[in-house]
Image 1 (cartoon, rainbow, N blue to C red):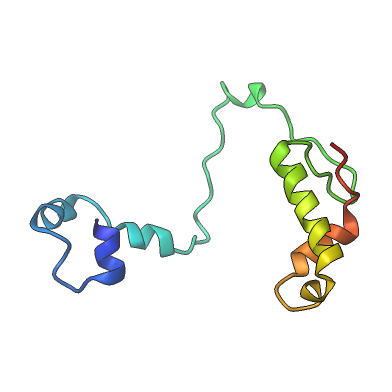
Image 2: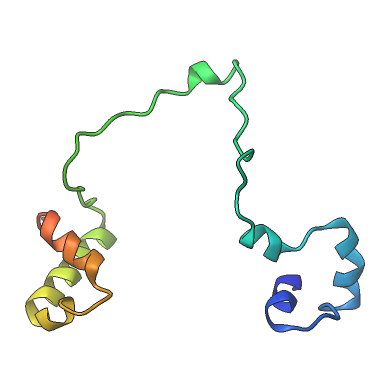
Length: 110
């Protein structure tokens, strides 16, 4: 509720109950708009956990692979249909990501 008041309200607060809790809580909007500082580094993992965490795997550079999930297949088909049916749209601004996807990703075979 306080977030709604921060965005759309005035300076009086959302309600008496929310205002009463406010001395104990920081505003959500401050957390959402705060920029990380140079000292905002996550603490190291404790030694008891660190050995259990596998090192990150390195992938060979190259075009991304589309997952074979139903949603990914549907979005892949929709992008390719857009390219076929409405190529003029892809030449307009704002479609860079779709153009790059179509240029670098092989069609997803179900």
